[in-house]
Image (cartoon, rainbow, N blue to C red):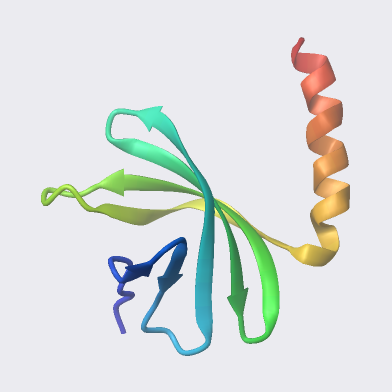
Length: 91
């Protein structure tokens, strides 16, 4: 079954997949018609932080790609610490 990524109410995006909702935190312009979408999602009662690349289709609508990661809430603190450690190495 195909997802319906176009149905939006405020920051919530409802999909046809039963029990799945997403709250968009931020869209970051990646260039060349792509964005990195940061969102909180819930699927089958579990919450995730999703970081995913979306592209613009021929009709100008954003569609998700397979490039991304869904981080379970239980791992968020560990991933956040790793990103902060990486940030200090990038400076």
